[in-house]
Image (cartoon, rainbow, N blue to C red; front, side):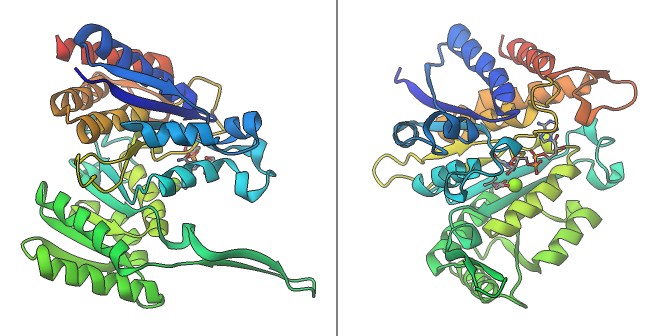
Length: 370
Ligand SMILES: NC(=O)C1=CN([C@@H]2O[C@H](COP(=O)(O)OP(=O)(O)OC[C@H]3O[C@@H](n4cnc5c(N)ncnc54)[C@H](O)[C@@H]3O)[C@@H](O)[C@H]2O)C=CC1
Ligand SMILES: CC(C)CC(=O)C(=O)O
Ligand SMILES: [Mg+2]
């Protein structure tokens, strides 16, 4: 069997703690099922800055470009608050997304039945929730130029970020959203702010044209992104697939995370375009949460977002759909048994730390794989 090459970039804060739980699952799949994962490790974020003075080294970038898939933990933390902007920890993640051309970020928000009570919303609003946010990841205000702070010389400074979108960027991300919608509820809601932003006007036009041209069988709605945020907490189950830009997608997916109970629950897949010859996509899998400096090092972080990100890796990079389904089922079974990390703790449940949660999911995964 050909090797399945994975690059692990644990990063900072709770990133390495969560990644350790995925490493155990990979080792089990190799030992018990000959899965053939070959793993390599690299540094990213603050840990890379401390070692190399850059948020990711050229050597680790080359490894990421060569890997079949990258598993990413989280980056950042107060220790690096004052490092130069270009080498801040988050710049490592942005470079990976840009250089690997990972334009499509899939952020599913699923409320596991056992967690309906863990959401800050009423259980009936989130029970059975299954939405998918498709976030554009390589354009918009995170990358647009100019991006500057200028001294105006009169005691004032001016900061500029630039929101830029070209037609092709909107076409390809909306095509991904429509294609995915066909595999689930067949509905897409596009969110922008065409009432105040030119990029919103173009976004709306291109999504509408792409729909008319190739995806008219899918139901399409448009919503202003601020109203979309409101609707996400008012009646989240009205949505199936949401497609939106880089900044709105970042914000709306953190909102969606809380519908599921905790930021510690939300996985994501960042995908590039399929290669013309092999059909393979570059891909990076990461939890939606950050490095959680407030709990890092205390052993309480929820590893589910990281483990569920690995399940997405099995599905999207290696077509190991049965294994991905099993791993997600293992997570659901553990939650059904009332095993909880602190962020999703509820009355009558047993509170565990990161390692025990990882062990419980692995034990369940083994039982389902036997
Ligand atoms: N993909 C990445 O690497 C991301 C990095 N960041 C960076 O992370 C650092 C901290 O950012 P914050 O705004 O605090 O966001 P955060 O996502 O790290 O934490 C927000 C809150 O959620 C909690 N939380 C997050 N993940 C959790 C988990 N797995 N289990 C239990 N609780 C969890 C944290 O304890 C904290 O109270 C910053 O430097 C930021 O730039 C933020 C978001 C994404
Ligand atoms: C560069 C990241 C720190 C931005 C972010 O919050 C995210 O992608 O979720
Ligand atoms: Mg974010």
